[in-house]
Image 1 (spheres, rainbow, N blue to C red):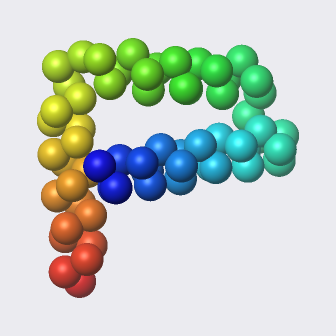
Image 2: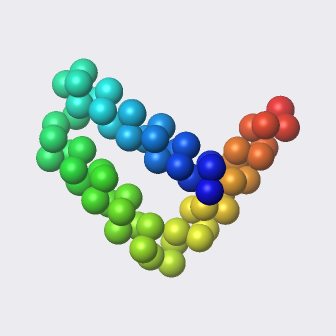
Length: 62
């Protein structure tokens, strides 16, 4: 749970920075957020969470 919340905050900050820098429009940011929201409700969410946890564990073991 802690990892998920941290990643949500991280990706939210990245979207915010891209918006403020002018590298991303509001429509694109909305599309990215909506894509993440709808992706989380699919069967792929479990696989993505497992992959993310594996990558974080591998990075911490380096």
